[in-house]
Image 1 (cartoon, rainbow, N blue to C red):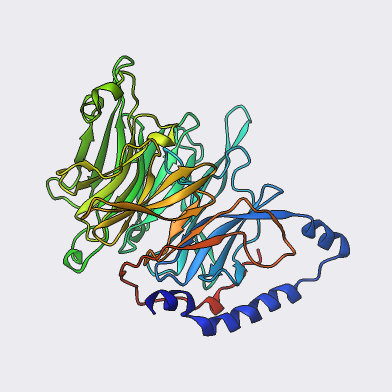
Image 2 (image 1 turned 120 degrees about the vertical axis):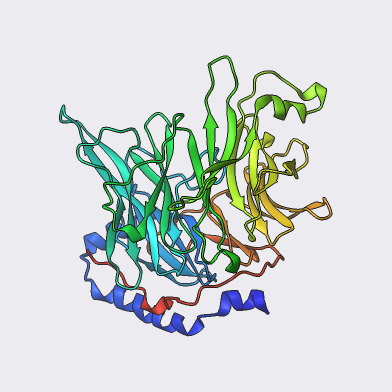
Length: 439
């Protein structure tokens, strides 16, 4: 009954949604040439993200003319509501929301109360010689009012490295926004924006990083026992050595606004030689480039799961590892069977879900930490996906392409047969109150 209610709750708001869609469709008169131009456009829906209460899914509608439109749909994928007009996010940099990636993917982020969305938008840079280059900044959309406000932008003139801001993640208490800044040559750094400090969006400095090799930010869940504590952010940081020595991978934590000793510290460090020691002698090879990705906290905040690989470009060599919050009990939970496992997600306290390549598709695999067993719960079309808050469903992007005149979405749902209890915030925005921003 709990799984059923996830898809059914909020049914009365769908009546208002239908009226809203009808109003939007009838409120603007289009010429025959405009209608023909729109009807010829195809689209695919990408970057799906569940709201925290599991009632809605935000996503981007990728049009064949290179533009993207922010939309939201109910949890049954029946009624799509556009929130913004289509626009180009970045003409020079593809929007990549797939979790089949060694670096943090692009994406959207719901606020903890599901009232706002953090999104990427184009930001243009003008250089001294008159040349212009597109980058990306971050903006906040208030869903009820349709108001757009800048969250993280660049100074003018801009003299640093990180032209592309992406991967926004809210702290559970809504006080901070962490995101990744990326340079044209792949340099990456972690930014933390204190939303309560009224800091200008152009004045958010990156966290100091001598290696510019940090990404995969993730906030520790807030539990009743953490109610009076500062949020804790974990992230990956690579340590670059001399050319002849392999890199070292670390997971670090920081506690913004905290003056306590150890608020910023290293959780775990994985060296190439330590990783090689875990391999059978016949599988050891000298040239490896370790990479950590997909870091996720356990729901109780006492452990993390992550993907670790000796070859970032070969997803058949990715493995799932876990470690406790103090950096102890580091262990691999996935088998070395040549299939590869990545994009971990906790399912309660004793299970971890992950993706595994299966031809051009991906198996959804579940690892039971208490028994050591693992099994496949289904297969999905892409690694551009998201688990529902209760882990009973996965929403994923498909390779399908539809015309704008057709109803519905190209997103699909997989029922996992699993269930994990989740806390739901108390303040919600009914879907019937979602407005279309006209300008």
